[in-house]
Image (cartoon, rainbow, N blue to C red):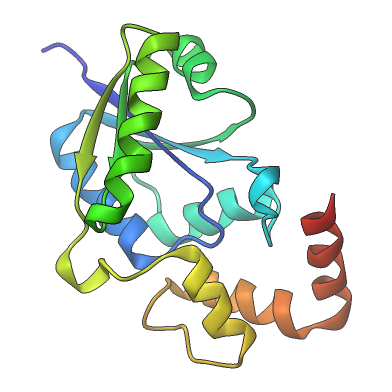
Length: 174
């Protein structure tokens, strides 16, 4: 049987239940999935790449069909390095489509072998985004029904433990 691998790139800052849903369903379609955690400095991440990767590992458990790797630079370069030319992207709403469509076309222009497959999360998760989850957490809201337990604990720690919160703020500015 031919191995069909895919890459699911994202910032995962923090990982939420919609991400986990797409990852788990991707493993039913592809023989293996690389979850590529983007450095994404332009987005001013709350967590370092290493912390985001650990949250994913802690949330997904030990699944041999899932590999979690850092993504620094262009996705097309990463795809070439990994020799994987299928990209998974999640679409929550029509508003996501325009941006995702433009990215898919640009990626294909840079690397003609690259194909993008879109998955929609379970309906229960279509409203979730990492940005919204962080905002709810920042104002003291309960995020445990939106993120896996490891991410909820890290959010609480990063936002409410002064030393860790200061490190996160410095990372966002750099």
